[in-house]
Image (cartoon, rainbow, N blue to C red; front, side, top):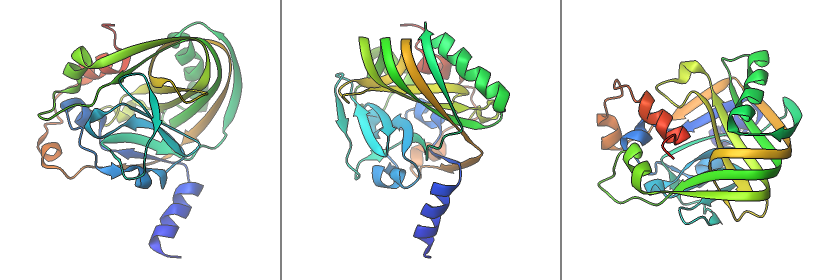
Length: 253
């Protein structure tokens, strides 16, 4: 077995979260793609992230990578495109649960956190939630031009918001444990894509009519750091927690 085949075998048969770069690098404005979609697919069949130039929100479902664009449309992404930040894994079933009448995003997180507390807070978890939503609130971002602004500045001028009613679709999300502060956002980060693959984005709010939750616990972690000069010069000792909170939750919206 050659090294490439061996690596693929291990990735598909071990629970490993594969992460491209740091969220903190993205917040500084490193939007240069460093890993191809083709390579990303070698490490998982479900995932979230963004694209080169910050061109939209990434949602990987069943091994297919979709881009939710700033204009609200969704497209399948070619293998030669690149990502500056993403997290993927192979989805397996550790637990499933039916969800009904979840009134808002906070209530969903409460339900998810109950499972996390039972299974252990110091692991990674990927979730997939398929169902019918009374309401979904998402956002996306327009592609940026150099010199790149910090992400929190982009959110002030170049993000777009979309509200959908009575829509079927899939939520894909990652839970990062507290020890990941400084490497990613602690807690839950979820993206949405509609069943017809025409709508999607970074989740900001929801109301679930009924849905099925699938959860996968992950104990392995692999990170791929970018090689560009800008990333190597960032001062990661600076506390970015307030910027990350604003970026993830969009509390100003």
